[in-house]
Amino acid sequence: MFEIDLDLVKKYDKPGPRYTSYPTAPHFNESFTHQDYLDEIIKTNYGEGLPDLSLYYHLPYCDTLCYFCGCNMLITRNRDRVKEYINYVKKEIDLLRAYILAGRKVSQLHWGGGTP
Image (cartoon, rainbow, N blue to C red; front, side, top):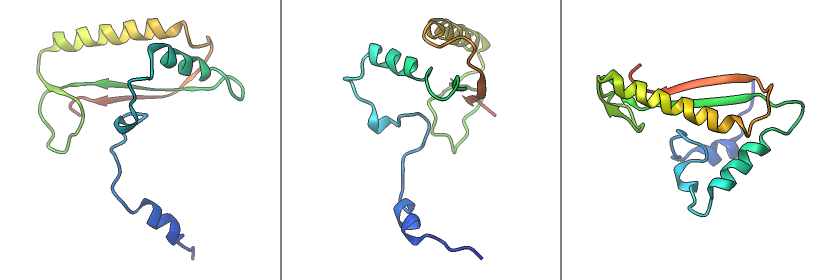
C-alpha cells in the first residue's frame, strides 16, 4: 500500500491553465524581445552533452469543429491554406536553424491542432 501526500493533493487541487503553450499565456510579457527569444533558443544548446530537442508544431486548420477544442484554429477544407502554412513553418525552421547547434537530435515531435 502507498501513502498519498495530502499536501501535494491540496497544492494541485485547483483549476489551472490549459498547457497549450509554454510559457502559458498569463506569463506572456511585452518586454520579452525578439533578441530575448533568440538568446533563450541559444541557451538550449548547452547542458549535459548535446541536449535533445522537443518540437511542437500547431496546425490550426480543421475540417470540422470538435466541441471540446480550446485551440487556436480555423475551420476550412481549403488545402491550399494548409500548404501555405506549412511553407511558413519550413521558413521558420530555416530561420531558427542558425541558432541551434548542428547534431542536436529531435527526440520528441508533436503536431497539435487540426482535425484528428
